[in-house]
Image (cartoon, rainbow, N blue to C red):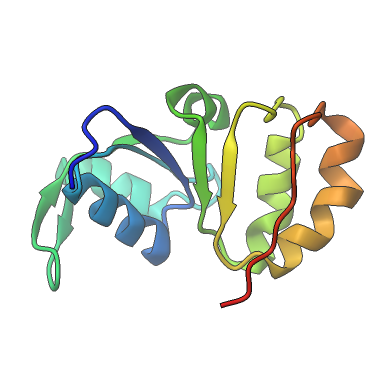
Amino acid sequence: MTCSNRSVSIIGAGNSGCAFSVDLASRGFHVLLYGHPKHRRNIDTIQRNGNLAAGGKIEGTFHPTISTEMAAALDFSDILIITVPSYGHDDIINELSGFDLSNHIVVVINANFFLWCIPRCLTQKLSWKRMRLRMHHG
């Protein structure tokens, strides 16, 4: 299956974010990989190397769009996959609080803390008229 007309923004450039980027890019998605400005080691390495190299089940070099600007990630796609660990959720939630996400699909990997914080942080600041929270255990 290829999805050459779809784009996805991956929020978090750690191991999980890089793995999602490679997997989706290998399937034909246009991918933006966002790294928080305070945690940019992987982003800097990808920029320095000129690509994201993968080995294992998926092999090759991939060229996601790279950014440390949340606005760029939101403009790039209406689908956000948040891959940061729980201890980074507060930083991401604070960044997202300045944006209207009512037209975005937000998927949170490792969402325990995130789901606790959304009602407390985001819904007070944003117009999420069509936002629905759904938690899937599996």
